[in-house]
Length: 399
Image 1: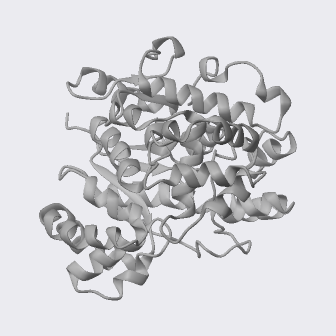
Image 2: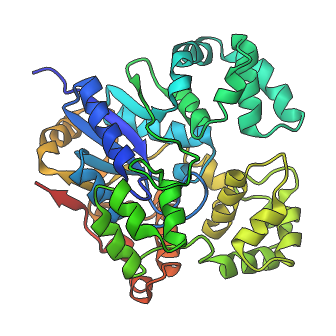
């Protein structure tokens, strides 16, 4: 019997919307996949904020609308820069024997992907020689990356195209993918930056609609599972951006700057700026606006805030260069043949679903557990702030 075709999709689904359902459908159609495996950020997202919605709620949506297996991307990678985020996700995809990796992409960027992939895989030194001086000159990471690619490929128009949302992340998937995993870009439907409500509103637009009290109308148009998320909103089973502002400001005001300098991603004296401005701000959002400079993106600074709350140090990050195991958040029973195959295959990543099997002395577990505790304590629903859901909530299982 030949090995199955397995397509990975790296995702957040905060919340799950029609565009996500479309990508799952197209990924299966384009690859002929026997199984679709979603590698999903858990409690903290790549934009640096805690996910608005519970990870098991998002898992349920994914399984209802095309996914066969949902694995958690550890917070060490989900709350990290694009290279580390992509590297952690691709490591899991490779070790669950994925043959393809699908990602959303702006249509105008797709014609460049093959050339970009070839450059990053075959001429990394050429790219690095162009990239590093731009970064040292003060450009933000995304701006320097786009400029270096444009220079190396002699495509000036590429600078603007790489400013599209998640474009740099797509480049990092191409860089990280081994040759045995084929990239499968799916053209994005709708305008990512457009905050108007439509059938293909972005997750950001839906979160904004929720903040403005317009979620019901937006969800009815743009989501295949509006009732799940409406229920979460009504019960206040959500985590708002400023929910943990006071713990964050407390840590910044009381932690020595030498200790803050050890936080993963903290560089160039940013710890001093954070500590000083924490004395003059009252919320996380105010703090980010005050700390923001041209050199750093909001996402980078937001990730630093979450890393401070997690106490995620540079040493901890270095101790976990790739995921040590993959936690199963949910699956369809039809995935059983793949799970048996992975158990029998040397070099596959351990797949864990029971809390008692989690290696509690590991850096990965420590950080993921802290992330879940923080998400729960910041949840707007008082009942969700109690207990230890990370160790008591079973995976989602569908027939």
